Amino acid sequence: MYEIVMPQLSDSMEEGKLIAWKKHLGEHVNVGDVIAEVESDKAIMEVQSFKAGMLSEVNVKEGDAVPVGSVIARIDTGAKESKAHEPKKVEAKEKPVVKQVKVQETVASVKEEPKEEPHAVVKSGHTAVHLKGGISPKARAKAAALGVDVAKVMTKNANQTVHAEDVDAYAKERYFTPKARKLLQAYHLDSSLFVLDHKIDSDEVQHYIDTNELSLPKALTSMQKAIILNVTASAAKPTFHIYESIDAALLEKHTQHSITAWLVKIFAKVMMQHENFRAKLLENAISIAPNASLSIAVADDNNLYMPVIKDANKLTIDEISKQLAAFKKKLQSSSFSAEDMQGGSFGISNLGMLGVKRFDAMINRDESGIMAIGGIEDGKISITLTADHRLINGYEAALFMNDVKKELREPLNFKD
Image 1: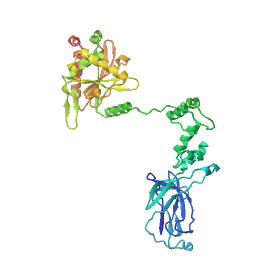
Image 2: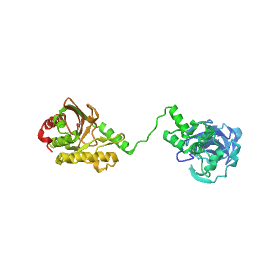
Image 3: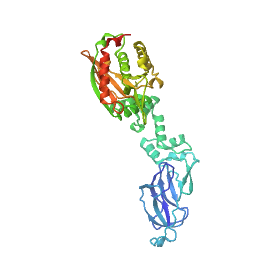
Image 4: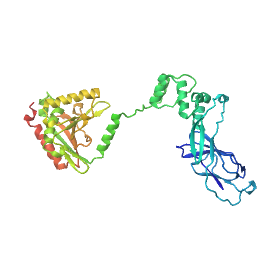
């Protein structure tokens, strides 16, 4: 018994669709006879038989799709047509010869197609199959749906197999202006959404977009991808929050420097008294930084950066203010470097100047915690500490907050 299996017509092909049987049950088959036609994702192919005999079994109906290697029919190599139902001896499975079918055109113009040369070889079982240029079923269907002349598309893509994408590209070039094509690309619109009987300009495409209130898909920038990775990692950390208020009297009195600058100075001082706020969790250890380095959240409409003021405990208030001013310039010019973002162990995010009363912030990268700074109200500023519970416990956090409040009431800390 000779088994006919669904052939693999390309490396990516996992299943094939049986288009038509070319032999009937009980019919005699000669070596080289076409048994069936199958469709892959690239072309329609003929399946031939290596063996002569009688087609004794058909396992797949026309139109069915089955996995590559499935037995679709059997040929009784020892039987004549009248012995169709005699017991069958199963021979070793052997894959059939497959060759490409030259697609039959339904329009007269197709006869003008240039003769295509073989351009690829695909292994099917033990048989090398030469593929010629042609047009895939999907491409043919798309051309029919768009009313596109298949012959012209094939001429434009001579000596290669035409796919649906080629038909779409032809239609867009043929019927849309360059500006209209840019809108199609930006909104991921298919040319089949329009009647292709005239040149379509950008106004017509924009009218379609406005009428259907379509959203504009925008690809993520590298910065947005980095932010997503960072906040996703932060969300996985075990954290806790402490909500407090600090006295803003001295901050409001010493306005020659910003509130953020003064807080960097105060937090750096207190961090030197609480080493776990300078800690970083390693694989099997905790690393304590010798100095207090703070990352500062700076953002515009599209980007968020966390540049670091390194060794802030060694800096004067003027030096801290200069670094904050430099951060603003780099934000405007999008010129932050990777080095700018390295070395922080605690963060500050201040939305108070935007009228936000209180909020929570997410810990940056592998830092120990972050302080969210709200706006001033009745001489007080709401602050929220988010701490990595693997590095800082609640007791330590409470002591840290008390020391921050104490230092903010000390006038000596506000001397230049």
